[in-house]
Image 1: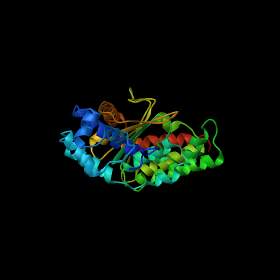
Image 2: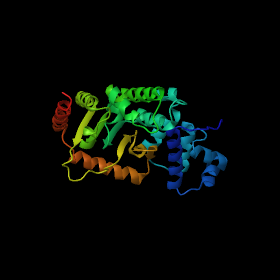
Image 3: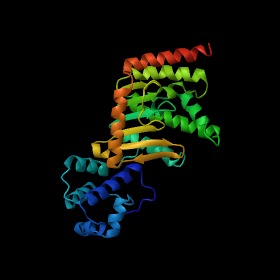
Image 4: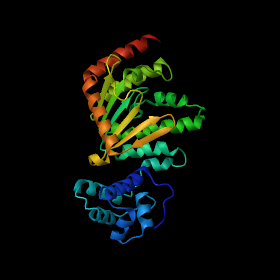
Length: 287
């Protein structure tokens, strides 16, 4: 079997879940390899996603680890059998891996929850707004790079605009007022956000400055739900790119964060009224 040079995010997650099954069973890599009748090196390569694992081999691993979590085992077997390439692979070699992995995460999610504090969620940005966000990158991008990044971001939006993947977006007032590209671009973005908020499967909730506490402040977060809760993933935007977390402790923490957001944010209708009030002020600045 050929060794993968650069395993994808999903392949790495499958490998880490194999390792988690082994560790929960209290087995060392060599012990499990012996039970499976493979070499310790093969076991390591499976867990690091350097080589693939068949659904049959995966079920053998689960059995050897005495795992009784059938929903998780079935979900992992489905991951192992899915060899389809996502549309984002067309951009490999053109964009950095961070861009591809964010799209890959979104493409396989059952539901997405987003919390933003500095700019509109990428899945709800207009073309002009997205272009203005990328235009602020330093060192500056070339016109070609700017165009590719913008078109890639717009293409990512198909999964939520089509209703294929439900989206909850909690947007802080700071992000609603922050200008990228000037007031006209922001006003158009707010208008598009209102339209998206009426779409089936998209929920937009505003978090005003007046809210006493804002969990996760300063972080733009995405909580991507998997086929089972154990396969949920958190993605965080940082200046260096995208970070991904999937430990049980991290998942529990961020489930609590989004639960608190759900209880503190404005309702969907209140949010629309709030966004309209901001849009009115922005439009007045260039009328």
